[in-house]
Length: 471
Image 1 (cartoon, rainbow, N blue to C red):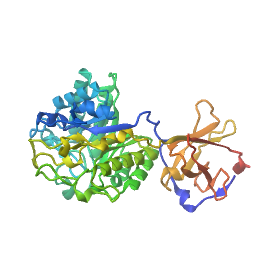
Image 2 (spheres, one colour; image 1 turned 60 degrees about the vertical axis):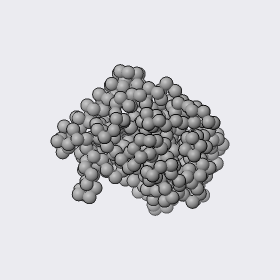
Image 3 (tube, rainbow, N blue to C red; image 1 turned 90 degrees about the vertical axis):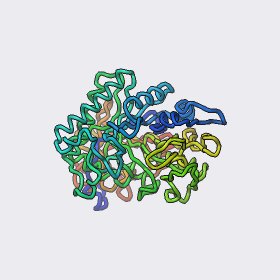
Image 4 (tube, rainbow, N blue to C red; image 1 turned 45 degrees about the vertical axis):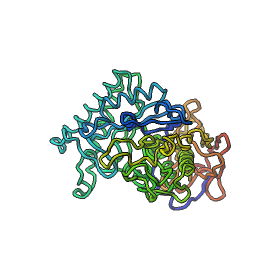
């Protein structure tokens, strides 16, 4: 059937072949990079008044992924080096949790505002081949050392919040016109290649993640990365803190949905946090104060718990595969940070110091009965031997500027399909095209689209191509 669609659909871009295969396990993660240090500083963690090992505590609470950072040579701290990372991975794996290793490629905090080259590499900062080789060697040697101890991580981040150019200087945002993408791509690809090479002979093949802070920044960054040949990654990591983002939870979800359809990779919120109080145990200022609050979620234990449930449901409903809470155990102790004695995060942990560091309700967000997305297949049965391309546009892709390809079923080559996961009860509309421009669809529909509602256990929406266009 020939149907005329809106002009906006005539100039769509083709996304990747389809979303990545659905994860069998959703990641309920916790960044525990501070825990070893906190224990050395005297911190204890309680459940129902009883002191518990923090790794066991998180595992029993439903955490299945521990994230841990590594700095190159941070002389200002004894932690977040290879020995500290070994200890974290050993303890996490002993409790049955997977591990995400987060390479900062810096001697200090690398984040969405700054990426500072390690001091040992500053002399080769502008020598892209030499710097790429140094990054490759460091990454591969670190992973090889961990693998030799039976501690290969399950996921690896090549960079942390790499919104700015990798391994630059503090003033580059002000003194340079933007990211030098040939340099940036070479460095990222060197890190990715190092992970692949290090795992080639290992029993564990880590998934590779690239990570950007705040959802509004993710799509432009990955579009530029793809244009410059950065493609061999498995996961997109997104930091989401409402204090520093222009997007609410709805905007975060829409971004996740577009990303997973456009790049055929999994998407995970790899950093988020929320305060359970605006008070503080110490004089060190809280980084998440009243200015971080969303109206629906007060700074209470219940508000923190509801935030975690709702962001997790948002991620799930939009096809994301995990949520990682940043530093839920960075409690106040006698030790000092650069910013004062104690913690800058105690009001946003999962432990209430007013009750002896008792576990807060938010840690149980892992136990909530979430609405799970369901498998949806949209397909066209074609005449035998038809091999011309077929493209699908659907509002569930999240963009009026994106189509995806249908591909022949491996066991039934005359059936061309696209598979995704969508929320049960979701109303969708879509159309299939067999030629450019995408202005005439193959499938009948009163307004030029097919309309459907996703079933409680998913939907298989198979159509016959009657060849009306070609007659």
